[in-house]
Length: 401
Ligand SMILES: [Zn+2]
Image 1 (cartoon, rainbow, N blue to C red):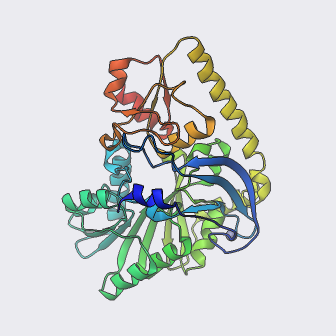
Image 2 (cartoon, rainbow, N blue to C red):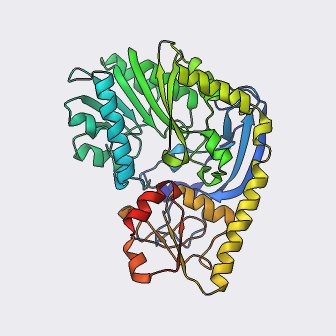
Image 3 (cartoon, rainbow, N blue to C red):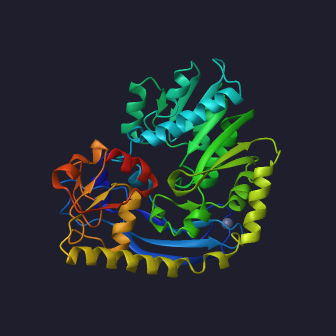
């Protein structure tokens, strides 16, 4: 699909007036980040001169199921088309995180050659390859054809499609039922939240488990990680909201583990049988005590962001006025949100570096900062480096030593 042609005709977006999870109409917008371009849509030399479509970035709280969500839905065919530049295998930290997870699951669930494992948004096969190496049957499902092709090349069977109840039903009718379904960082971006969870329920064995990783709302609010809000991330989950979502589809959130990855995530263990474990009970009680299930909890977030944006902007202007050169690290979506909502342009930042070769020679959306390989840091020796990919800061510091 030619993405640019689609975008040139008319970008499609819908403003949701009902909750993405429960369908309720009591949505309160508590944060407006303005109109921003698509955070993952890097520009090329060819389209850098063409105006980009931008969409409102408003965040709302549902009074009925407490799900925090953005109100705008950009057509997934635009968001996840073939130009999607993210390849999981470029992050050593993510690879280790994934293989540790897989090896623990293989041991715990006693998986073997008769087992069947599915990953949703399987990207370039970075996770499933760990099962393939152990002789376990796998299937990846991912709508982005570049990464899906890369997965097939390393021996990870992959269907290039969106995961829907229809696809799950088709696989089930062909005799496929999953012992494990992985879904990492896909529950928040998926446009049809209920359809996605219903499809998991359909494909999972009666004694199977869905192992789902998703960013957690509490660190987002507590640490003011507003740059993780962009059009691709439609939902920002609390355990309260997750619990209600799964129950609607006959699934139960039975255990969870907090993860440090991506600024604070949760790994959820979701099964067709209810046996709510201590970790889930404790987190639900914690959310009740903190008021995370009330609008009040989110009231001051907008003011905190405004203060943070001013502080960052002032710091960069001050350094620049002293004659310093500044570069940035990490051409990821969160970096695009930060530079576009704070207004960090070429007058403040000279260039952005990223390890992903697919991004080199392109430009950040909105502010159009050029993106190079990390070798540019050695060549140009900037005085300061603004780490946009702060979730990988330890890895970046180590690499750049
Ligand atoms: Zn709701």
